[in-house]
Length: 341
Image (cartoon, rainbow, N blue to C red; front, side, top):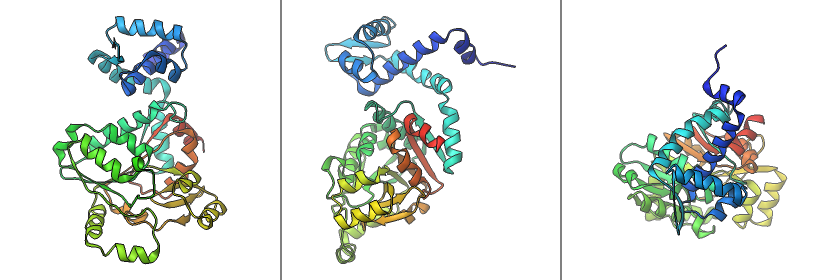
C-alpha cells in the first residue's frame, strides 16, 4: 500500500505537521491583516507572547516576513511560500475532500472552503473575500454586469478586489434596494467600493429595502429605477450573502406582525429578502425592488459567500432553493457542520 509523503510525515514526525500548521496560520493572518502588530496576532491566534516571539524571529530570519514600526508584513518570498503551503495544508486538513463532499451533498456547481471559522477569527472573513475575488477572476468575461447584495461578507469581498479587474470593463449594480440598512453594509456602498478597488464603474439604486405594493408598482415605472432594474436583470454574475433569519429580520427593523410570521414559520435563513425554514421552504418574503429568487436561474454565475459555524443552518436551508449553477464560498467552520447535517 502506497503512502503519500504527508501521510508518512504525520506518522513519523507528527510535530513537524503541527509546527507547519502553526506557521501557516501565522503567515495567513499576517497576509490578511498586514501590517499587523504582535499583540493583535497573539490575541487572534491564541498564542502566548513567548511562543509568538520565537515564531516571528524564525520567520523573520527566513526572510518570510518583514518587521517595521507599523507591524509585520509578508515579504515576496513569504507570499510565495504561503501560496505553496495553501496546497499542502488543504491536503493535510482534508479540505479538498470536504469541498467535493459538500458539492455533491448540496447539488451545486462548486464549493470553495477556506481554513478557519469566521465566528472565531475575524480575519477568516478576509480570506472568504480573497477566495471570492479569485473565483470571480477565473469566471469573468469582458463587459460583465455584476449584481451585488449587501452585508458584512460582501463588504469583505469588496476590499479584496484589485485594479486588474478593471481591464474587463465591469459594471457593479446593487441587486436590490437597500435603504434602511446600515449604510456601510448597503449594496450601494459595497458596489461603490468594488468599482473603486477594481477601476470599474457602478450604478446606484436608491430605493427602500422594503416597500408596500402600491409604492412598488409606482416606483418600478420611474425611468431611472426601470433602467437600473434592466441592468440588474441582465447581470452575468451575482454575488450574494446568506443571513441568519432572525438577525436579518432585526437588522431590517421588521414589523412585529412580520417578525411573528418569521418566528412562527421557524425561519432559519435569509437571502434576497426571502426567509427559509430548515426544509428550504419560503415562510416569508419581503417585497423588494430588484433581483428575485426566480431570476437566478437565468444568470450564468451565482456566487454565494457565507461562513462561520453559526451560519451553517441558514446556509443549508437556502441551498435547498439555490440554483444548481451556484458556487458556494465558505469556511471550514461552516463546511464541517454542513457536511454532517
